[in-house]
Length: 157
Image: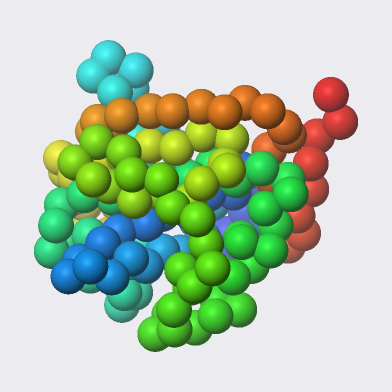
């Protein structure tokens, strides 16, 4: 497994935050495992660890949001990656937008998605969620924050 980790550290991915809400509380986590798998029907996949608060909230509602982060949002990526622990208030001071079905997403990203879970694939420690995209917004105003080899980067265009 360590060999796979080392190989995948060299795979460059975009950085996003998955958000969910239950009982009026919003929580989220940074993910790099986001993939668009179909345009028609509109579907994405994301993998989350089962022991996370975000995963537990999604299983309660069947809904989640995704914010694709811009290069200037690196502090948000860090915050949701664990600078503020999973049991802390990661949303404190963060501006939110509401999309379809009142799904919360972080404002100011490159794009935002509201999704409903349509399939789940269990693994020993995580779960792969297939989400139907209920609404997609783009702001497309800056460069994407990307991650590779344990560092944040951006592309020069």
